[in-house]
Amino acid sequence: MYTSYFGFKENPFNLTPDPRYLFLSPYHQEALNHFLYGVNERKGFIVIIGGIGTGKTTLCRAFLGQLDNSTKSALIFNSFITEKELLEIMTKELGIEHEVVSGTKNEYIHKINEFLIKNYSRGCNAVLVIDEAQNLSQPVLEQLRMLSNLETEKDKLLQIVLVGQPELKDLLNSSSLRQLNERITVRHELRPLDRKDIQGYVEHRLVVGGGNGNVRFSNAAFSSIYKYSQGNPRRINAVCDRALLIAYTKEKHSISKGMIKEAIGEISGDITGRHDLMVWPWVRIVSFTVLLLILFLVAGFAGWNFREDIFKIFSGREKIPVITTRNVLPIVPKHEKEAPAQTLFLDEKTSLSGLFDLFHNETKQGNYALNEGHLGLMIFTMEPNHYVMFKKPFRVHLPNSSNDSWKSNRYILIRGITEGGAIVVDAEGKEWPVSKEFILNHWGQKVSWVYPYENKSSDLTKGMRGRDVLRVQRILKEIGYSIESTGTYDETTFLEVMKLQRHFGLVADGIVGSRTRALLYLISP
Image (cartoon, rainbow, N blue to C red; front, top):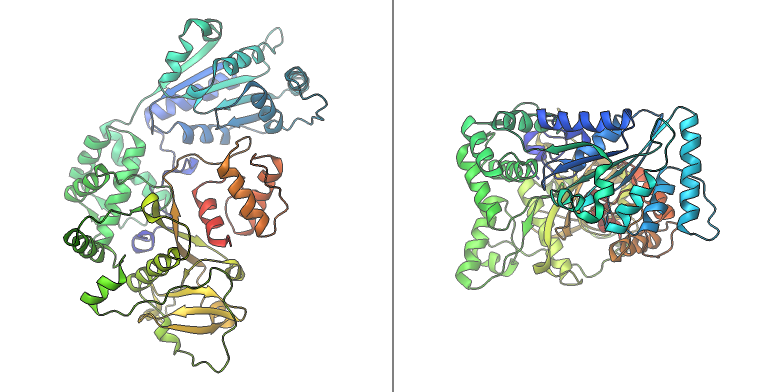
């Protein structure tokens, strides 16, 4: 929400492990050096330990990004796997052609060994990186030890990097894993940032996010950030993200110590960090007095309202009509009166309030329980022809024009798509039919919508299984992708997710993260 106000291209403090945002403090640089040394020198086992939120996953991705084409790599994020699943994932990740006959572990090991020998004969290296390794079972760790036996007289054919929380150290020190522990030749423990690194970390993320230097944190603010976070990057992101939101609502560009304390207070009140989203936890209304307090607080921060009937009493604002269908709206008769174009161009607060009103009305028709999750505002840059696939209310950001300065930070609020165009909502909550040409002529590339989500930190990647994977597969199938609903994130799912990401201009990594989840929500029937 605040990105456009501060001039960012994207949220600089999201919690996704994006290597572009890696700030190489002395500790992170040292950890990266251990990564590279252990792999390049073919040391076999490498272990990196770090607390929750210290940047281990981001470091993993940055490390893999620095490997040249002569090093084959396999990355495993889901560490709750069996021995056979470990071998299956390795086979796929390393690009090993494998026609499964019996599908036994020995067959997989034979194929992996054959591949590693050929790879080594070409002067190449191979590395397996396992994140969240503290969750690995002892049988899987024993299987990794056996894989480390694949070697020549001089070199290890496979370098195995285990990245995990401090519990991994205790696990490796257990008597049952003594043989594995003795083979670990490179170890490093990632430490949090020092106080002197806090300013560099924050300013680095502001720059990568596209900031032009118009956001300033005071020295006292940096001190408060360190005192709260103790140098933990995830906590720093959470408090800075919330502080920018507070500054946005107060129309300030300087972040003071008071704003940081206010942000810390909100986070401590069970308002958690976000994944490229603006968190909006729904609160329980226990009395009429508490309800009024919440409504005034929300109105003061962003102009959003949750209960139109009550808000109408105080503001006199007319309700936005309830959505009656989740699918394509019918063709609007041509004789319907059309609104003057300028009345459909809304400012930030009016359009945002209307967008949340539309979402709230839609949930009365759907199954989403407001007290079971969070709401966020997702902003995408999209080509105009994509809008016909949207199944939920959304905003179109009008293009800025030096000749029409009044259009700056203006939006079109769209309730739903029709066969001939769309239904647009004006500032008074009235609906107007517009043509497809109207939408295309006022398309400013950026689109935003409300996204309900659970506070999950895990991305969906190849090899994972479960209801979340099944839900993604069903959505993809419903909108026309060639995929079967198996509940397993297999190669076909990976390729179809990449196809979806390329189609909508996302990074085509085949990983269902927060942005891909939000997109699937928008286009799902």
